Image (cartoon, rainbow, N blue to C red):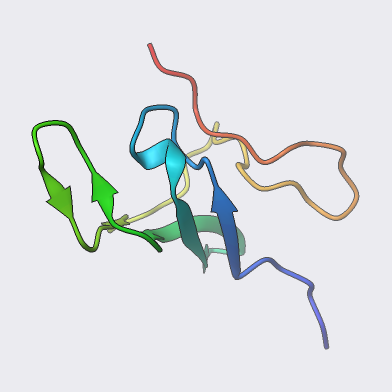
Length: 90
C-alpha cells in the first residue's frame, strides 16, 4: 500500500536569514503517531558567515517529538490546499 507520505525534500531558502537562506537543504521527515514531523535538516553546501566563520556541514535535528492536542499540521495532507510553512517568529 502506498501512502504518498513525504519522507524527504530538497529546498533552497529554507530559513529567513543568510547564510541559511542562501543554500540548499535536505529535509527529512518522520512519522510520529501517524503525523509527519521534521526529523532533521541538513545543509547541502557550506554555511559562510561574516568574519570568515564557515561551517562545512550543518544539521539541525529534532528529538523527543510528540503531538499535542492543539497541534497544527506543518505538512499539507493530500486532500488539503495548505502550503508547507515555517512557524512565525514572535
